[in-house]
Length: 468
Ligand code: HAM
Image (cartoon, rainbow, N blue to C red; front, side, top):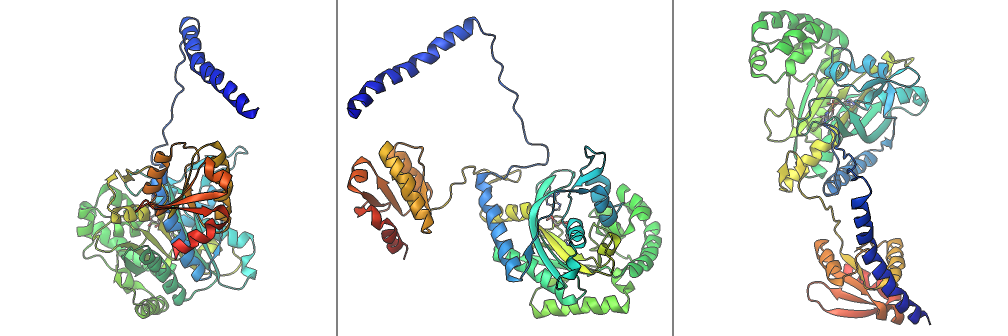
């Protein structure tokens, strides 16, 4: 009876499907006004989709970040993407590119001024204070991964929405912590196969910088004519930023500039020497870089950046950080709360990994879109009953810890086995109507084509044997 019902039902359905569109089309041409296609949208300038083909680089980076952060006992912290705009103005500082030009600031519905976070540090410091983390054992060590927003001029490796892997240690002033952080950033890249170069400097305390700035401004005034327009403005607004301008004229003009390291107090000098000694102990090569001052106002003492080794003069740091001993007090901490941290740019690391994989690059975008995962095993099915059985068998395997590839929406065995090959499967598990009835599956060796029939209850054990 059911067989008859099926046969009877099949043909009319097919016919109905075939006929219906033709009728509708002829009617619509005559009577209905022509339907315009809906407007399509592009992502906003500087905001990129991370496509499935790139997703594996993102996940690889995320996993390496998690491994290193957890190894050093950092707790995961998430802060909101939206914060009071003033939080960033007070910490990153007026006169910096991030605050003056790049922040996405807008009025919330209640009239308050809010900003999309341009970085993690200020929000994490706010969280430390508002949750009374001062009462926890110090220092508090946290890591985060998430999106940041800066309205910068987009180019390869510089976007308006991007991700960072960020680590902060709050509640201690100890050079060993700075060395630990630099080691984490360096080792994280090394774990990903990226050999990096650490550039390091000390910008001393606020007093050291004030004395040095007077000297620097005096020097820069004598070289004003050689500086780029932006740096001419910076002489009065933010003279330290002139130091890391990459314009050739500015670089030349800076050749004889006074170096901040000579203006450090004994305490800051000793602190910096200790950081370097710890780095020597860790065998981390570093380049002393007297012009490195970083673009955010809150730093004091140690500052550092990491670049791909051998990319001389590169402007694109993979990451950077430093000590910020006065930041927390500037946003309400009741007592001195020294801190230090770093952030690594995930998109820049992904681009480096893609280049290392020698994938063809087009404007920083990898051309591969499919993002098919790699799988040792692939589950192919033929026919509706087999598809149903495959659904539950695949889930049973997943629960026992074996991930298999599949394309359940595909009917053709040939197409499925082609996908198995693309995923790099060594074996396919095949089920059809006959196997469903027999309670078996076929295991096919993708290289030799040799097939074995296995009881469905023994699939897991059989696959484990192959995995050995
Ligand atoms: P930052 O140097 O502004 O530091 O950013 C760190 C890293 O984020 C950069 O080295 C770069 O790799 C990446 N990055 C920055 N801007 C962009 C962009 N527009 N597009 C793509 N990647 C970008 C900070 O953010 C500090 N909060 C780091 C820190 C943590 N200091 C102490 N603790």
